[in-house]
Length: 242
Image (tube, rainbow, N blue to C red):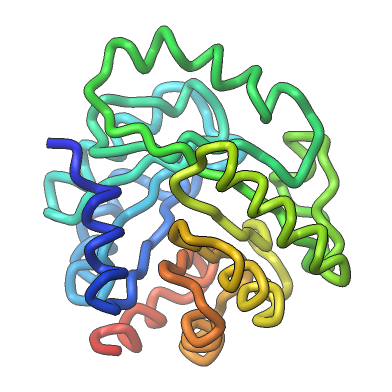
């Protein structure tokens, strides 16, 4: 059943905070999945995202299958490349890197993905993806050869997000990038949320519960944490309740 987007929308309707844990297949060994997922299951996480900017071939599907063996949470692909598509997941964010102008990541990769997607039953969710500068050069910037959006250009960020909604995106994702030195500023989150009617996801650079709460207060409907958990799994212990 294709119900991930509907579930996201329902949780927004009932004013429920939503948290996704991002797992990079290149950084999570199969033998470490079970103990890690046990911690995720005990947290308030609603979803598990799987993906990365630079992932080796044929490692995503075994990881997804191992995750699903230990958790009932929906597994959503957050792919950096076509090779990360697997029918083992529940859904996939069909990401359009709207902050850049590289045609490969605006439409090229999407066309390349269609033959694979035709063979799956994945729920495919069109998602606008905006990379916001954070102080370091992220892997997304390196792989896609696109610069992030300047954080002082709030109007441009807002207009880009709104353009994505008008183009038909069902979700909007503000991203500081994996390993970001700082999260997306709350002023940007608030300004974007004020203009959008679609759900807003925020990720990158969130290293503690204070920053997590700040993102929600600014207007994020879902927050994604990844690198912080790679560096400190105990962060999950802080997330057993809101």
